[in-house]
Amino acid sequence: MNRSFGVDLVRAVSILIVIFRHYGFMPGFNFGTYAIEFLFVVSGYLIGQILIKDFYSTELVEPSSVKRFMMRRWFRILPLYYLAVFVKFIFHPEVGANLLYYIFFLQNHFYGISFFPETWSLVIDEWFYLGTPIFLFLFMRFVSSKRLYVLFYLIGIIVVINILRFVWISKTNIPFDGLNGNIILHQDTLLIGVILAFIKSKFTTIFNRFNSKPYFLVATILFLMHTYFIKSIRYPIDNIDSYFWVKTFDFTVCAIIIIAMLPFIENSIMPVKNIKFKLFNKVIVMGSKLSYALYLAHNMSHDLAGFVLSPVTNNYIIVGIMGIIFSIGISYLAYQYVEKYFLIIRDKYYPDQPHLKVI
Image (cartoon, rainbow, N blue to C red):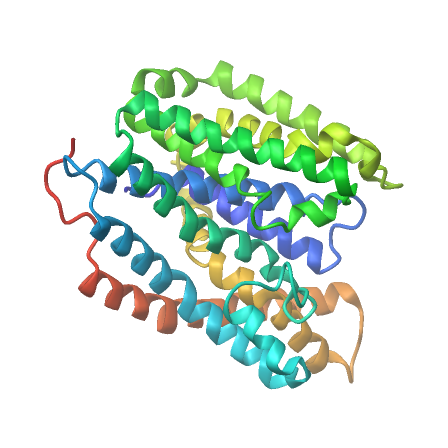
């Protein structure tokens, strides 16, 4: 897939919002929640395109396609993640054997996320990478690969997740934040991204219809209205647990609004042509490339900045600025010498899309 400046912009801005939130630059309502939702949907959308292209590249979807996808994902995700977990363990060995929960991405449901808090969202991503190709393969291999059947199958999974949330909340009244990190009950956000990818590939006319400024503006207005509503019930007093429908169906509603914005974002938001913005364009693309490393390193970098500056100042702005500098430097090194290295190995042993014929 060719890079999209619009998607790069979403990634770069989203990770920046997350960093600003964690560094105390954005107090009050947690807009980082929406940044993560955007990243979930974009992740599902990009991964969906890879899966759909590969699964439809042969007349009958092969198990090798599932294996290739998983190996490529693991080479992309695991080396940098395990490196970050190892570094955390050096400074916080008290986690002990509970580190195994982090090794197997089970911390959300068992030990807890206090050892490496930001990884709660990566847990949902990783189980999505594991489950989605298997379920999609089983359906396409043993039921049908016809486009309408597959589309209804994906929609059906999302409906089932909403039903499960409805039943679970009805029985337990679990708070919203307990749902947010649930491995199973938060998969619909990513799957809706997969549905958009499927529509792009198999229902191109519908996808292109949404690649227009009017549709984008309507979706953006809906998103702003949705954000304002959620802000009104969460800040300054958090009453979100009083809204049953928000805890059940709003994950899906929010993701649908986001995918209505994505076709225009992907295909119509271009780099600024003015030569004066050349550096800005490069920063956005590099920010997108470093987004995963920044995600893993930014809190540790902030802690490092606080330690280095502790003899001089504990001003959160100064510490935050230094944390950003450390984050960028550490993330760049991690990207250049760890992430890219394993991507080269990945492409050597598990090349992308070996089939020439796309059906």
